[in-house]
Amino acid sequence: MNAYFLKEHDLAPFLGRLIAVTKVIGPVAKKTKFVFAELRDAADLRLDYNSTILPPKKVFFPPQQPLVTFHGSQVKSCIAPVDQVLFGVHFYDMKGIDILDTLFRSGYPDENYLANREHTTIVCSNIQKVAPRAFFATAGPEMTPQGHDAFITKIAGGYVFDTRTPKGESLVAHGAFVPANDAQTQAAVAENDRAFNACPQQMKYSSADIAKKVRASFRNEELWKTLAADCLSCGTCNIICPTCYCFDVQDTWNLDQTSGVRTRIWDACLSPGFAEVSRGGGKTQNFREHPHQRYRHRVMRKTTYLNDTIGGPACVGCGRCSLSCLADIADPVPIVDTIMEA
Amino acid sequence: MGTCSCASQHENIFLPREAEIIRATRVTELEKHFTLKMKDGAMQYAPGQFLEVSVHGYGEIPIGFASSPTREGGVPNAASALGCRTFDIVIRSVGRVSTAVNTLEQGQSLFVRGPLGKGFNVDVMTAHPVLVVAAGIGLCPTRSLIQYIFDRRAEFGRFTLFYGVKSPKEQLFLGDLTRWRGSNEVEFFETVDRGDETWKGNVGLITTLFKKTTFAPDTRVVICGPPVMYKFVVAELDAIGIPHHHVFVDLERRMKCGLGKCGHCQMNDKYVCLDGPVFSVAEVERLEELFS
Image (tube, rainbow over the protein chains, first blue to last red):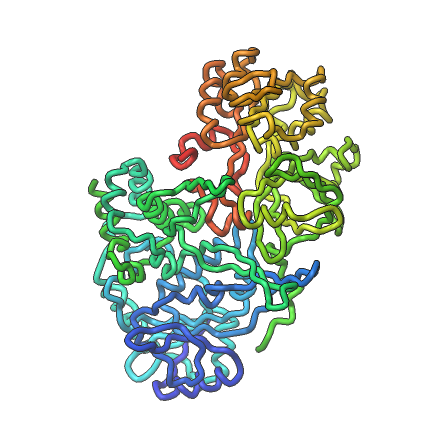
């Protein structure tokens, strides 16, 4: 839609006015790391973050989300979205949100996610600092994120604010925005290019070649056992992933023991019981019993299984799994290299 | 900006419907047979589809329909194409939810979501011989198809039913079995892995029943039972020359949400709850995780 310029010292007043009228979520510091959290004070916003511990998927798909409440024979839906602004989302995380939008919309549209999404205005921001293991420039480069409402880029002296939707445009009324000039918009393009070229890692192969070779390697048991040899089955790589959306559904009673809530809780396909069914008499059958089978399933999900549905790999190159894995065996770049060269 | 006032327009796919238990019969030590009646209208389903059945406070489990949509109150009903108010399910106590369900009795309620998944493709079976191979609790979901065939008997060719259980006391639907033994509409063969003093019939795995009769290569086959059984049955069908796109398997996985979202039932790139639970063998035989 339109490109605006906001002077550096006008960002805090803009956010302050936004916080006064709506819930605003953005990156803030947490000890030595960053998290997406509700902004109480504009000064808490840290657009210079490199990456957050959890991706912003939690804004629409919380780690624990009530689905229905029950009381006697009464059941009620818990869908009650709140208008909010998600501010400062990096390119790769926007891609993750786009992927989840497609997945929650496909088949049976899941309003538990979609209603939250619909009520959120998303402002992306340029990547001022690049995370140590990121490779977002070469992770599914054929996919361009589409779902954001505006994009803010830090340039010398201020910010270029590109609006993409009427929801994004409506934010402009809260700040001292002026139309951006050509030099400012060009500076923003250059700044985004710089970050794009600053990834410390690169995926060397095309998404299509990776999908084909990884899928064809399914039965190479030795390869998967070697790759997964140190896997602790902890599921951290799932929990921190912007495109993982597996969940468990659990019922809990309230103290009155007559009412309660059915909640969905993030789950991890790496955890041992994920694909296990009861057989009775204390017996179970586990369809992915061994750690290397679960590890393989994750790699298949990220590189090939979902590609037809979402238009590319379900990996955005954020580098979170690489940094979070205690055994350091989750980084997609060396995994793919090993498979491609096997 | 503020809280959404449009909660009613967001349909919640996790919202269950209430079904009253109008009959509850314990059929074996582990299994209970329920007839349910929807409180808020009809249930329009196809044989082989399933429900997420829940008891508040315990959770949900996937359970196949154990009666045909051609029936109402257990008897054929021409109007049931518009949906049934009543239908059957059978629950085996294997875990927390199923054990909680099996404490319920007539007059109490269960909660259900569905129908879910893809059922049996009866169009492919029409005008052809049909063989149903059901083992153990696999008779429950296939009963929806068996009743369907009985109710539209003229639309199908020769109908053969193989039923196997570990021991005679594990046989389900004893009334049905008695009727099928004396019926001239089905050729019914049964077996047990281990007999007892009361058992006069065949003893051996379900595949031993293939020696009792012959089949034409255009037979449509449905298999439902423990996963270990499938490959042995398919080997028998291969010997007859029945192509794999005419052989259907009803698969069991951990179908937690039933909506193709939660990921628990995924078998390679297939969601068993969405793409199945009924698949042709041709569709799934190349999947490495099919019988693992």
